[in-house]
Length: 419
Ligand code: EPZ
Image 1: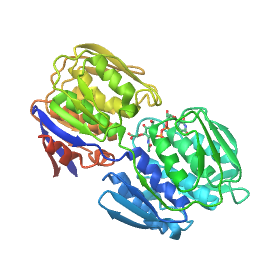
Image 2: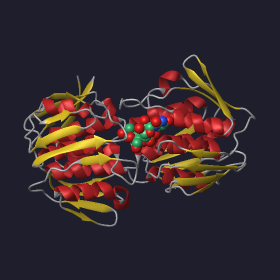
Image 3: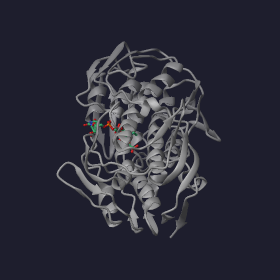
Image 4: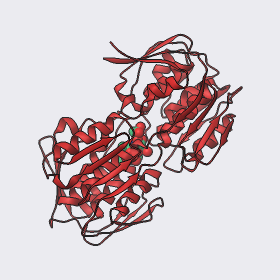
């Protein structure tokens, strides 16, 4: 078992560069199945979710070449076959194979996705959209069998009951080669949706309105190869901003698009965090006193649920009391008990987290309960006096590219150790 060991209480300084967005790339890779040519992605993060997707693509027959942060995929040899369950349920984003296989072959035999335990994570909206576009679903053992009734998907008018990133992207995948027009209303507006639509359009698709709540897709016969730069990871950027405000003596974060983080930055400013924002970087100053604030997550452009947990250790440094309400995943609270173990005054109530500060954290043996909860423990470990050991770190490595190396560059005393 691997663990991260941090000797906390040090001040960090310097520069850190944000990698390509995890939640984009995990959709961009399955999207490539829809192309009849080679697609190259640049700016691919070094995370284990990418390794898992490459493994699945190769198992299906794609030829994959990785050079530095570029990934070249030739999907022309991909076969329409049942996906090996152990690989599919190793990550959440494997649900994107439903849409891309349906779009390419008119059928998909895929197991249920895995991913972080954030409470219930249904996929009913994905299935409803596929059914509206002419597919039927049955279960075969642990696999879901989706088949287009007329061999090919057809366009449909779909209203999403809830704003869903995954269901919006999956519907786009099923629609780009479908017969006729698909309209998605109440679509998710996250930057990752725009990134995926950009790739699809550069492959020859007709997707309009990505980034608004109505997306229109006119199906085309064929898609071709292209080259695409993955957008910067706004969640990784937000994590380093919180970390810099908590333990930094002046840290510059490069490859950040401020427009993707407006609500988060506004919340940090409300706390009193001092930052200088430039075109594609943010400089976070050493902080003095911070003010406790309340936080509520919501779909983009609201404050991202994925930043709620990395922000929590910083909130614990602030003076006063506040609450955190996650309207996307009410049960995304795994980090709370772990932070309390380090001496924080933080509890979960019925549907929110309550905290009072300022807190002085003490090193402890804690676990990463999920990806972003793990990032919260890394920040807490850097803030704490003494040594912190974080277990279950596989979660962290799923989504943070070269995190140990990046933190060491900033002066952190952090190591990855085998037990
Ligand atoms: C994506 O998950 C991200 N994952 C998550 O990032 C992120 O937390 C989430 O979007 C919200 O922003 C990937 O991109 C791979 P949703 P997704 O469908 O698409 C409900 C991280 O830490 N819902 O937008 O699965 C759902 O329960 C991760 O990087 C339904 O009810 O999330 C939730 O309350 C974890 N039925 C809300 O919608 C459905 O069929 C939004 O979920 C689908 C979703």
